[in-house]
Amino acid sequence: KTVEAEKHIQLSKKLEYVRDLYIIQCLTGLRYCDVKRIRKHMIKGTKNKYLEIDVKKIKKIGNLRIPLLPIADQFLKKYNYDLTEISVDKYNEYIEELFKQLGFNEIIETKTIVGYQDDTYVKKPKYELLRSHSCRRFFISFCVENGVPDKQIMEWTGLSKLETYHKYITPIKIGENRLRQGVSKMMQNRKKE
Image (cartoon, rainbow, N blue to C red; front, side, top):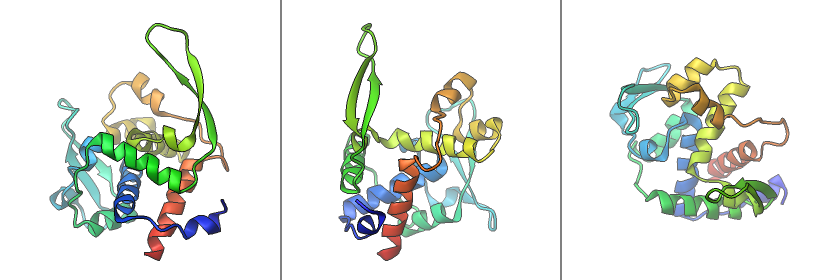
């Protein structure tokens, strides 16, 4: 499909919501369990807004302070800072449906680990590999690519171990980042609504 053809894809209300939620995750780096808890009182600052959230999985760190890009704030305003909860399983199912509809059919070879067996490689369409946690990987990789210091990214995401942090970083090759293109396409679709 061409970018022009994909601009005209009509999304159901459900997939429109999933698209918006996915973009919010890509722009904040939050886990799904935390992004669905965002409320208006967590947005601080006036000119340079930030999101202050007590993250469920991180007890010892306390609140995370994540810069809130204007576009992320616009998405949150669209839902009056009250994101409808969907089970993570359903959310991932809808993400797959969304990216399938957007034409993410490129076949990707990926490694799977089953028990103590040797690594097995399988080929799957890209849309089957994208999940809510892909947003966190995107956010971290995007920040690294744009020169944000590791310590700052780890602070924003609540990651305390460098080893864990490095697992999130995926090399992004210019012109080959389908996820970034996908977010851009979703943004273009949103502008038309």
